[in-house]
Image (cartoon, rainbow, N blue to C red; front, side, top):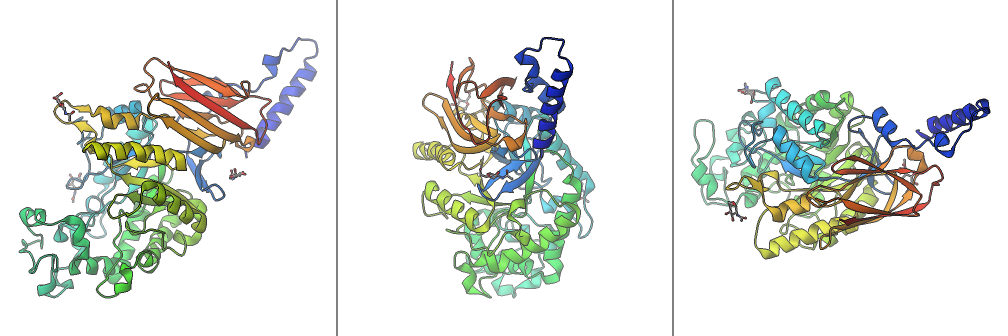
Length: 508
Ligand SMILES: *[C@@H]1O[C@H](CO)[C@@H](O)[C@H](O)[C@H]1NC(C)=O
Ligand SMILES: *[C@@H]1O[C@H](CO)[C@@H](O)[C@H](O)[C@H]1NC(C)=O
Ligand SMILES: *[C@@H]1O[C@H](CO)[C@@H](O)[C@H](O)[C@H]1NC(C)=O
């Protein structure tokens, strides 16, 4: 799309030269590479466009391939958002987005709890939604994309979980002797007058095993089967969110529901077979929700999840069948995953090919632990580069040493890796080397992108004394330092479509 205007510009420039025969035109005057001018003409962030269904990579509206390094910000209890006032690990305000930006993060998966948004059925809490929008805007002001995430774990407070509003679960859905957490415990928990068990009882459970209780399976089944219009209610909540965000620049996508359970496996045990819950339970609901989203927003990417223990995705198709407007959002924890991250990413890429869409690792272990866990984290982020996958760590709240109020250096350094946030072409490979902080990128130039530059994030904490850039062929790209973390690389006039360029960065 950009091709036509730039060629017109080139023709105009040539005409100008012809008509100005009297003056001596030097080479510089004919060049259209004007980094400063480009940034003046294109201020702020760039909207996310579509998925390239050949390369399975996310593109922005210029057609650049985009990569994301991010973190999760989710408040799992009332008031369902983190405060604006800085409190290391438990806030999400100006200071937080500044620190994340300086670390090198360019995206946040931000929890938009249904419980906070629709406390009374059919009545949205605009005060709450405005708070979420304000936090999203703060992120935009600091160059950070937001993945709008409707989060849940074990669904509802009546089930010792969180996510849906209290009105969602009805006490008489299962016979009294089978109520939560049968059969994880032999008898049901005592509940208060709102139907909610005590914190002490809830804390006695392994939450992830709660998905195997009769009551939790039943509740998920009702969501998927649209019992009492519950699937429609989720769809209408998403329509509301899409109305709020459809014109917001820094929206990375709509993450429909975090870690959805497979459904009512007591009614249909086949749902427990890997892949079956995806197509039988989730796919119809994702279609129902996306149909509502698309009544108000035709463009924003819809991010959908499958069962957390999938080996290969079981979906027949992406929501509404258009993989150019979807992203498969998946997590890696071991368990429930059984293989290495490398094997999982190979499988997720097979899913991308089959479903003609993109995939992003939206959660993995990113908190302090023993030496093995720290080694695994290092391996994970290196592996993501090798497979060219974007990632978001779990979670921002774990980044800070609450005694010192400072990020743990052993975690922060991974958020501060060098990476290509935007590529004006198709990447062949990129890699950050943690032992000497060097970075290498190789890509095939795509001139159809127009003038929009490749952008590398080279965070200050990793390059405190700056960096040296080597480009091959040397004259193929024009360097421009945008700010203290961003290096832009513009195609030189002579750089051709399909040309392979290599960029390497070394630490000063
Ligand atoms: C998608 O990627 C392929 C392979 O690099 C490229 O040829 C094509 O132009 C890209 N499509 C778009 C719409 O950018
Ligand atoms: C709406 O959200 C605001 C902000 O969290 C909260 O103070 C208020 O109590 C909520 N209203 C209802 C009816 O829950
Ligand atoms: C957290 O910070 C405190 C105070 O600076 C320090 O003594 C402690 O060693 C830090 N903990 C870790 C695990 O780094």
